[in-house]
Image (cartoon, helix red, strand yellow):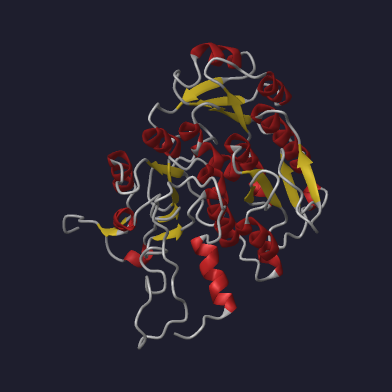
Length: 393
């Protein structure tokens, strides 16, 4: 087998998310790691592994970011959004968050719209996937962030050779407030809408990351029975914003919602089940707030509810290209019935020429330990544009 040229190998690494974190992986120890595609393979050579990455890395209606953990997925998603092969395809900055701080990673997604994808540190070090991504991305420096190339969230370390700025806070609620302050300085305004997510229910909070990245709105935190003072102060700075509480009373109780109503018009949305909660959020619309994905022609993102870090790791995919909400799966080998029903409801159709139709596309986060190839094939079929029987008209 002849050697693959370095640029082609780099593309495979970007999509497959190789070289993730060493320890503390979100995947179980015996999880299956997706084989890498053999690029540059000739038709007269015996295939070695999935031919050119199909169907695991891509099908006609899906693309997979196939990391074995969120560290690798973040690195791969950042390079999918910012190929960094030309000056204009490099990001302005990178957001660096500790992999264990899932709340701050979700809140940091508010800054992704400043052309700044998320990467993960590991304590005071950088995993190999993150180091390589920083080198490959070569952020140019964000003018709105004081020319910083790296925004360090909380305790994330300062990478050598890059200009960095730090967002400080003693808790996820404090860091969320500080992130919101930085966003306001960078954009010159406060948003009129805020999302409150449950700090003790990661699987319910996951869908907010993609929305924060797309809308630039803050994700602030509340526990089941407590509204942190930092969240309260952040809301006051927004001067009576519209507040959307994601999750049922079991995750943020009614007394907390009563407190929130003193700070702005407040609505509770969502459900107690992670799968249906994500679908509810994908469908939801209230004026300018919400994805409102109730018809064909959209991007969608799929991830495992067991891998909380993937919410922020791939949030940049929801804020560029085929903008789309996050949908969740609870088991790698099964597509939940509510997700199947939702995809059927928004499946594209055509009556004469499919070229004139609209299309759905799905981004999958994680290797086959997160979402199996069989489930990917099912998702592909449900995203496919279909002929519509018009009754002979």
